[in-house]
Amino acid sequence: MEASYKEIESVSFTSDIKNISVAESLVDAVCKNNSVHEDHYGNILIAVTEAVNNAIQHGNLEDHNKKVLISVKQNSDELCFTVKDAGQGFAFDNLPDPTAPENIEKESGRGIFLMKSLADKVTFEENGAKVILTFGRI
Image 1 (cartoon, rainbow, N blue to C red):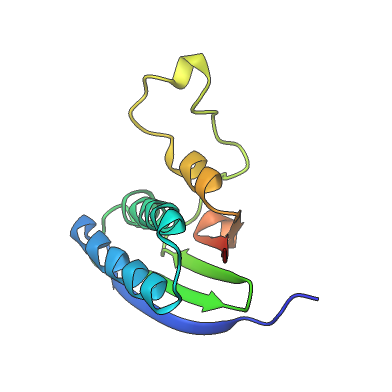
Image 2 (cartoon, rainbow, N blue to C red; image 1 turned 90 degrees about the horizontal axis):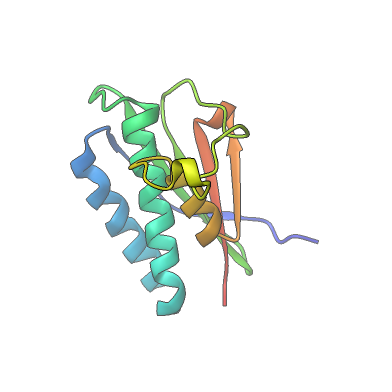
């Protein structure tokens, strides 16, 4: 049976790309306070900042009147970072494969692929306006 989650941190900020540093600071603090091994820290940092970047740029269209919310929950086995924007969402189940030959040289389209590669589990809710990144503790 899955242990229940407890929220340990949350922060919200305006949709300014400069605020990715707020997400980085949150990840730093959570990882330090939970003794996350340095081998896993990089995966968490990249996945969460990618989710925040997507929320700012694609979800909220860099509208400074819209907020991004990050919350962090934990149980004995996992850390879960939730990133939510105020956008309409997107077709997260119908994305082009960034590793396909026709997409290799495109400059965008790799964020969700990266998140799925780095997190143990990626879940989309609210039509894609909310992403939950789950990392097992090792």
